[in-house]
Image (cartoon, rainbow, N blue to C red; front, top):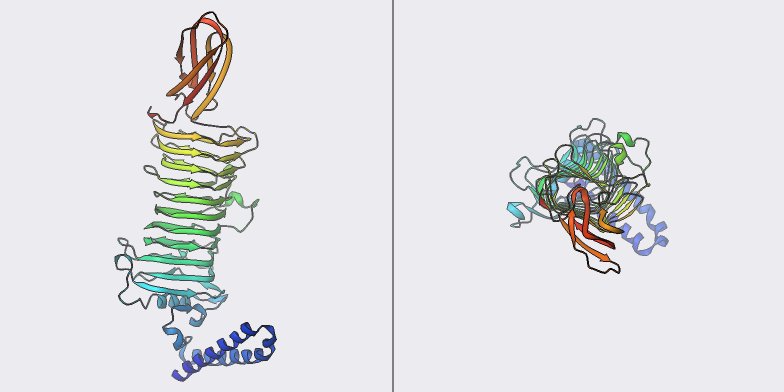
Length: 478
């Protein structure tokens, strides 16, 4: 066995040398070395086959035992995806977690593995059970560079990759990077589960065919998802299966996470947020359309929402927020009658800012911001600003308004009922009565602001224009 491993090392060195020749000297050298390259491949395959026949497992070349890069194919994984590679992937991951940097730890005793890698080398690997990172935890590890696909009998409640330690009362993983991966759940469970982890990155991943969640974030802190594509069914819109889209693209059940530059092209809910202080920017949601029961981003965090949604693209599917407290929505584009729905559970809406967005619809009278008070009327409304949104083909709703009316008489009324977001809720009014040539200056008074209509009266009849500004943004308890 020692001789065979030594031979493998020697052959690997020769193999690398020949490859360098080809890269370094270009195609002109290929004809001279390709035969030798082929000969090395045959010798390596022969030695590896003999080892497997006698020992029942694939050899691990001595040069790779202490390497920081663990190639799944070196552990007997099948990069064609035809046979089961679960054990090969598990062993590669286990070895990546085996040799921490001496005396070097990350947070709370999490071992630092110094940038250890599990490399898929562009292969597709089939697995029959979730790839769960070791319970011992650890950090500074990357899994990257290929595809992982669930088998037909993969557990329906599992995730292909799980950062899920047995202990739920401590942070078990830090600085784990999942990069350049295609995760195919094969309509069996979910894609990636990140539970009680710190500073995890999912970068340039393509996650498809999930039934539960494409990505689940639960507890932990500071997960970054960026430059990724997520969809239950692979399409580019106008899918005949859209009514049946289910599951959630990204389910965030924790605080202080960031999702940046992500496309969610099919799911019932694009992003579901039930934690606090999360940042979402540059997300394109064209998952299940609102008209079919879908939602682009659902903010389900009553109490302190404290989340920011900016520079996103809602393509026929919008935003739903329940009792939001400190929610900021800005710089986003809502296409195809997509709108923002605020749902009342306990009648609370505070610190909500919806500004500088674009809305485009089909002129069928859909309001850009809507209130659902079927469960409970909004009674605690404070610091809610809906303003400066530009709208085409939809109905503008706002918490501020300006209007004018001219007449000759003793009473002037400006009606804001179609514009203002909250019914019968004007608390701040400023007005100017501009009269024409007159023998006397009339006495005037603000007579009424009920039903979002502002009425001003004078003691004598005059020809005048009434200019009014109203504001619902600073209200407090109703």
